[in-house]
Image (cartoon, rainbow, N blue to C red; front, side, top):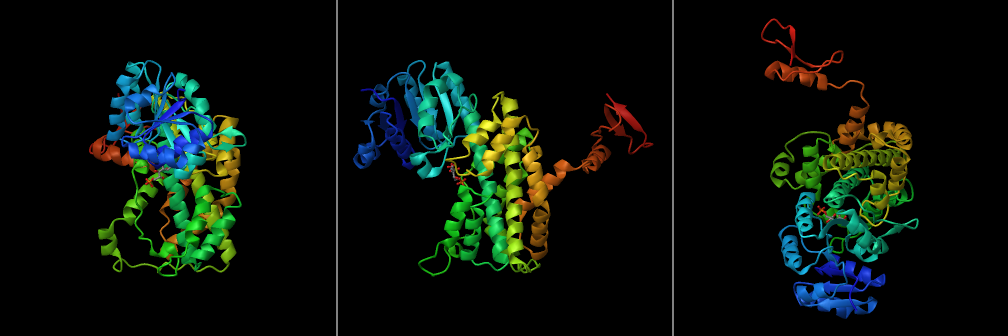
Length: 475
Ligand code: 6PG
């Protein structure tokens, strides 16, 4: 019989997704450029459900019921285009091609427009949760036409993570919306990890061993910080290195890498004019950690405190760091969600932010207890920013003394906390009555006649700086 859905590209993510589909009772067509991977999947996991393997793309396409639903799980960029080029002539009107990789949303927009000309649906879909998530229930963020979601959505919802009986999968909006949401998810993931790293750095500067810090993270994971990343932080910090007998984290090279989605988030935010400063700091923190030339030149040359945090009350300090982490995390979510909102306006996607937060509650890398609260707050009414949601206002109000103490302590003891600091700077910027941007405008007008606005009158104004210093109105 014909397959309900197909997966082409059977590396770990693709084959785990295919298995997840089969385990949920869907008949799954499977295909890979080299047949060995297809065979391996059938040999090792064929008993988990009904698979229809094909060696050629043509047979793969022919093995699918119509409208065909094909999930492409190959490398982003050229390889994805190559597979699409091969599929298009074999498909018929109304068929659906799903790109489940981490594609750039502009590529997705281009591909969607191209396939639409052929009467085909192209669904750029964010899939988060890593290898385990793909198999056991990821968070799925599909874009594309609403019509395609009617045919595809129920299948994707059946294999997604479920939270309180609700699938972590929903239609995000047209063309690039799904991949955009996934991109920002990754940007927030970078920020979350940077905050965790800063918290750990502070704890160890205060004398906690890796194992003691692991206990702290485990404790935090049973409270408001409950999240996947906090959970695995305890796991990583607890790991003992077989070679040295010491903590594994102490022998890992301290240069963080990146595959690019965090950088895309920041690049896109610059274009949209959305200050995602916490995400940018996190991307830069990774780049800086890998800058061996500068670090090598500065180490031992630049003077400063010796990174020892002296604390009188250790428990209070640990609680302060927890509060700084929670507060900074809220700011990163506020910035990322704001970026999605701005993009949604720009590209006319009409993304529902409450839904985004809802499908991030489970399955994805940034899944966290906080996301239920965020989703509820956005569902309750339109928010100019997450920061003004009632429960967030009080949450940040209660924690900000601790947040400020932690950053001050980092500064005086020489422990860099770029994530925590930029989050607090954003908070203080956004709540300020007046900003020194007024002076920036004055300077711009002084050296370049760039004009400024006035608080008491409409229009653009210029002071004749090199003349008699009177003010003129410019048309
Ligand atoms: C996910 C992850 C995943 C991403 C990794 C690596 O949602 O499952 O975001 O898509 O590939 O997190 O990202 P970096 O290599 O850039 O850290």
